[in-house]
Amino acid sequence: MAALQFAGAPREKLTALEKIEKDIATALQTAGQALQELSKDKPALKHVEGHTTNFLKTLQEIENGLSQQISYLSQVTTSQPHEGSSYASQKDLQMAMHRSEHVKSRLSELEKIRQEHLRQKHVIRTYSMPEQQVQQPHTPQQPHTPQPQQQQKQRDQQREQQAQL
Image (cartoon, rainbow, N blue to C red):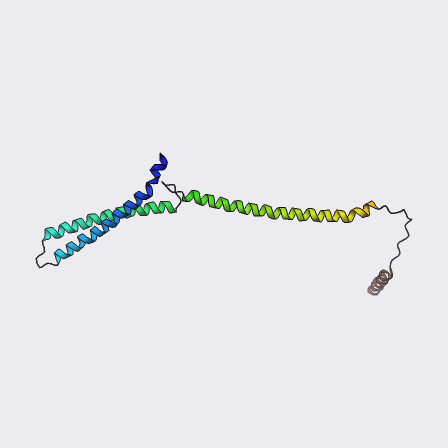
């Protein structure tokens, strides 16, 4: 029942606009008649006043009708609730769909990062596993002897220290 009530709203708006259009034509016609009467050598003041009064009445109706239409349009464009409009709901749906797509793409990116992390973790385990599995025979540790390059560095450092003293 309520859906039928809202179905006529756009048609009513168009009918109101058509009436305003006809009123504009009538106003122009009565203004033309008033001017035509004034252009005569001996204008009849009754006719001029009648045409002017009709013009002003019609002009007032046009102003009221246009004000109502402008008010309706400003209500529609500011997303305030009004009869027969689904713009706000459509906009909400569209925004929700965009947010949903963004979440899906972000989840996909996170899944790729997780898979890469697991792959790297697996690679590290495969490289470290053979070393752990192989048991090295127990050999007595030999005293650590520095290599020739390290011996040279140590000598250079000792010389620098002595030179600073």
